Image: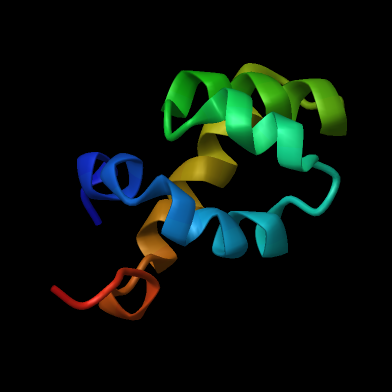
Length: 73
């Protein structure tokens, strides 16, 4: 999946992100606003993991993204 598509539809995919990272708050997701680097920082902060681990988790989550996550146009 293309990160630009995730970023462009951030409000629609936050539900999927919440399932993956339950410790992140609504405010965290508002701050992230689809920016991958911000998401990595919040994962590091809330889960106490290193940057490379946070990036790995994001990459795995991104691979799981399917068309079902996105609104039909």
